[in-house]
Image (tube, rainbow, N blue to C red):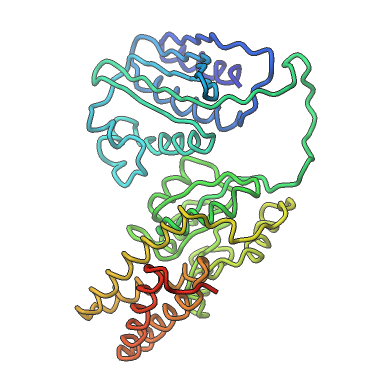
Length: 391
């Protein structure tokens, strides 16, 4: 891993007339277990920015072991440069998903700020953390700390042998979904299958991420703020990306499926997602056997269920406020979201009533819609108070 990184950046630094140094005090007679591809991508992103924005001086990569008493040891990668540095305001939003990428971060990183967001996600996936300090005009220091896992095999005893202990999917999936509880649920379905999962909160972020990172499949919610899934899909196809895109939708009328197909979606999945149907698509596009299917209920723990309840409270308030103001598009938007998540969390009646509201409004029947909203109001209160029985 380090040999590859050093080879790349000795050459880049030489071309930029910079000094590139690698300092390592870490030495292990045993193998370190980890995801070399992810580590390499993080280092390449960070070193790439350091070289790009250092006009003169040096860029240094330091690798050391950090032993923690009563805690798991860590491997620490530090990237230091003598470049242009960053302001405190830029540092505060550095690792955010970049609706604000066109502002100071974009100017600092030449449009590659999303690479830092991806680096943060990769580091989180490995159970590590990433920190940054910087002084404007003097340079920056990035520190990546990863938990150490030692193999029982000595490094001198290694022979390359494939691991067939279990068959898994292999690939990277982007979930474009604005509902955080559904993001988390979908991630918990996919990651145990061996997939690397990234998330985007809207179509604009998804579009930017595809330009920075290679994905094998996109699960794209069709109704998102800022940029819808349909708009993002059209733009991706227009720019020549042929990644399989699976539309996620609570709208299953024929006209909707035709609209998704015309936009460039390969297939669509109805919300709530049927796991068997999802696995059929994974088999088609990522043709490796999946791990044995577990009970869906084990995916939903207290943390995820509390997130679902918080979302229900917010949607309830938005829907009732919109109803009192006769703002039917906002009423439908809230009902549509509830329709998509109800059954996933054990409340099929929530899905049914959400669909009733949407169908009534689509048919221009506000009286019927209002009656269904009142039923939704009662059900949501029961769910949030812990009185509704899931089924």
